[in-house]
Amino acid sequence: MAIDYHHLKNRPFAPVTQHYTARDTMLYALSLGLGNDPLDAGALPFVYEGLQGGLRALPTQAVVLGYPGFWAREPDTGIDWVKLLHGEQRVRWHRPLPADCEVVGRNRITHLIDKGEGKGAILVIERRLETGAGELLATLQQVTFLRGDGGYSQQGGGQPCQPSDAPLPALQPTPADRAPDFTDTQAIRPEAALLYRLMGDTNPLHADPAVAAKAGFERPILHGLASYGLVAHALLRQCAGSDPARLKALDIRFAAPVYPGETLVTEIWRVPGQPQHYQLRARVAERGVVVLSHGCAELV
Image (cartoon, rainbow, N blue to C red; front, side, top):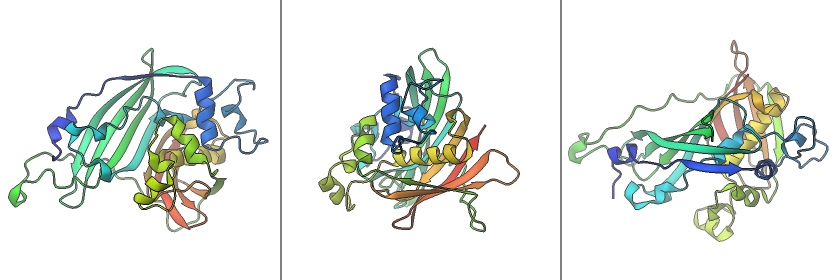
């Protein structure tokens, strides 16, 4: 079954209402390794409620809230979901996340882009994360690479038969002509993926060695959005005094998998002439592989 542009673009998603608690907020931070160093004063407000000002939520917790589930597996989509990859994550925050809140996720498909037969397609789903009272907390764009669905817009003879949307503005690579202005190193705990799956992504690829082996990996891999959270925390630690309210936007591309137990090195560049704008990437120290690239961030 081939994908149908008009069906997907008009596919309804019911609002996802979710109440997360202070316990959930602490568990999210712990799953990213905050608290590994019990003397790290910058991490303590995210995992302990007893400080002045109370518990604080990491802004990237937004990516696990109001999520519509693995809807691409539904038969009506026509998507070859086995070949689906999370390509990029883009988030803009409108106000700090509360540590305990009822939220509503409103999801819709905004872009479907045909890259051509054998080259895949790009699908973008937008999520507006609101409080129960209707205040907008964050706008998220999940960019998914549909490796098995390229050429959907063409018919016999190569003539267009379905629309293909214009792509999102391209993310820019990090500078190749100068060293980063900041470097942050984080050790990823061996059980990190088992902790992060408690956030709601229970794909066995992140837990079961047999499933990981069938997918071509030597062992279970870390969730891409966990790596996203690690990079965001590195940015806050290096450039924002660990203040979560200062993160305004973070866009990044997933370039390669990360394994629990590895060391993540985040490299950050200031953008000349644009105060509070940064470019970043992350690599695994043990393998020398860039795992997140084309990062663009804005602080306030």
